[in-house]
Length: 143
Image (cartoon, helix red, strand yellow):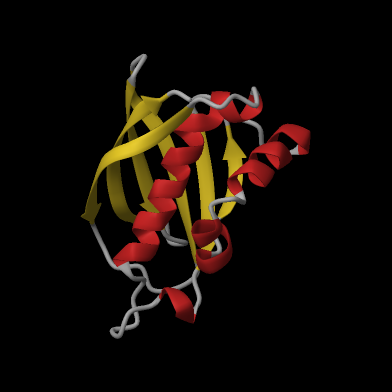
């Protein structure tokens, strides 16, 4: 079970604020974080839209990449460790177009190994439609 409020979540948010593209440029908000699940939110506005008026795939990918990064690195973040997990591959499946409102993501582990992890991130829109599924593989990088 993850943290949804209080000092632990704020600590994770402070550390992950260093991912300025996701947090500042894109506006992704961390809703909850824990060892087994991370949830994020994105309030869609014009900066997220492509020429056709739908949310750009890059915004969806950034949301998934950010959630997976928090999940993979959660233990290290709360322990103030210098051990880091980095993405080696991601595969995104766009399932339906997202237009407006709020997007939410849920990142979970598919497999958690000692040196490699595989995570799945599902993104839904404000109507609970499944917008995208992203599979991310990360590897352990030690200082």
